[in-house]
Length: 253
Image 1: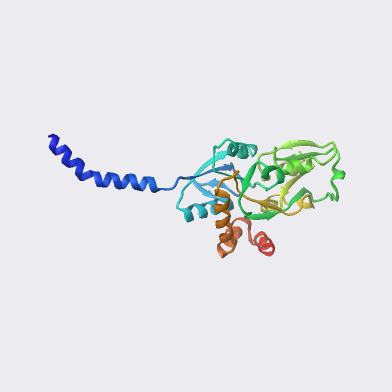
Image 2: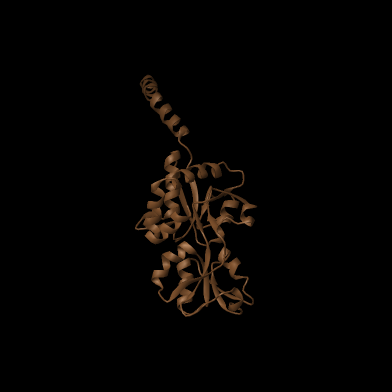
């Protein structure tokens, strides 16, 4: 019986070693922390969708890796998780700012936007001082909140997503909000009583955040540059943003 077991082991050994070799060669998954229900990375009908998802999926397939996605319920948890080593990439409409660059590395930008004021159509705000003492809607810990904090004596109500912020303004619970221009274009059709108003920033870049010193910054940048130079990039934009927004991005590209 022992002889038979030894023979069986000898027969199976090459296959077992081949399996171990394949597992050893398999690259690790790309661990992604995404903002839950972000307009650029979300789950619908059991499938992941969105501009950020498609870009990261493109990178993962190009490098033979799979995406391992976890969700952050709050925007401020994205970079906190990255700082703690809980993910390889943080994504969720993250704009590149000097403060964030001091703590993290970033990929090449995949979109360039401006932050704009969104307010009721009957209002005409020409400078932030006109909003003195107003209640404003923002996402806690975001660039939106930082920009609107320049309003003297402002009060804040908070939402988790851009469409929530527009809903607060439409319902009269906030005088105005700040939203990235492309995201505002996505949702303004749902709120015909609102308009895009005063620009609150110059051009700002969306990029993927990684740990300082991570080679992922360079790897992501290589594939983002390759994607942005292809027709596929504009097909992705048109699919999620519509033709008008895609044309705006193409004109600035």
